[in-house]
Figure: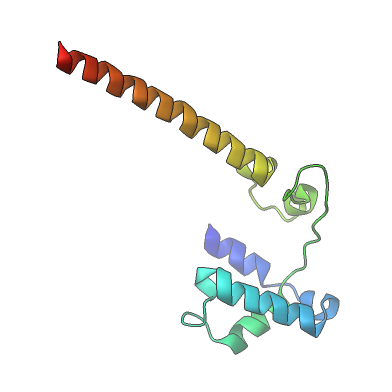
Length: 120
């Protein structure tokens, strides 16, 4: 699934016409620094540069939900969007922390019950 998404991402030729040289360089450096499959040890800089130039540019829009993407554009591309993508990253993180807190509370209650039984 990931392979098909990467192939789709790099089959258009928009970035070269839309982005400035500085923007392309910034994307290249970001990918090499923070995205493991694009690290310099895994992919040559020249190859990554060509892939970026051939890639499609997806506009991101700001709204009341920080870090949420313009899902209409992604839906048009036919990319499978799961529930995680449909809510903001911030909301997803909040929900995850809430579940962990509830789980930790239940674990602590079980430990207390176990300790109480040990003392009897």
